Amino acid sequence: MINKKFLLVILSFVTISIGWITLDYKAVEVPYVSIQDLKTKQYEQKRFRLGGYVEPGSINYSDDKLTVSFNLTQKKFNLPVQHFSAAIPDLFGDSAEVIIEGKYINEVLIADNLMTKCASRYEEGSNSY
Image 1 (cartoon, one colour):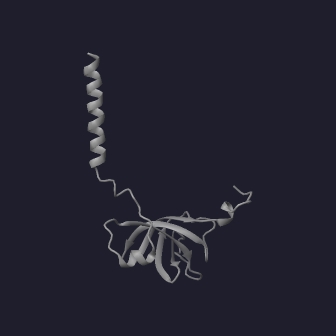
Image 2: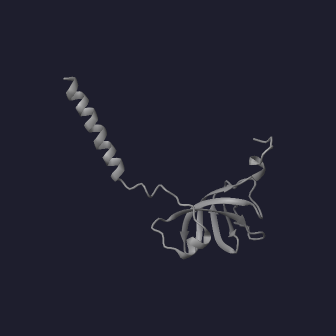
Image 3: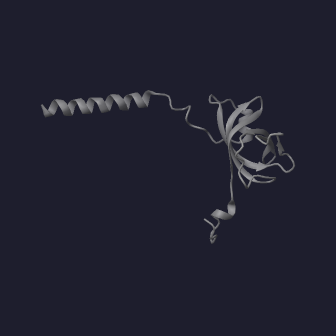
């Protein structure tokens, strides 16, 4: 009797494992790409993660302050970004280092996630954690 229960548990585990492996989880992955790659390469997925700097003077807020648009720069490449959210990070501004996630539509990244990086928090000897 114990052997049948053990066999049933193992068979269930194998079936569930095979089901998870065969399902397509690529939609969950968000690749980190450069602006150059985003503009020149073909990708199957629609969501991307990019990092760079906010181009000084490019920030524009909507009248209701719920949308911000700006240019993301990486070396000599620029990408227009629109972010729809009332939650803009405190450190966001001209020349801020940012990481964004969103969909690339008509040569604009429509961001639903905007994060700023604060280098001083991670520098050796910094006491602000």
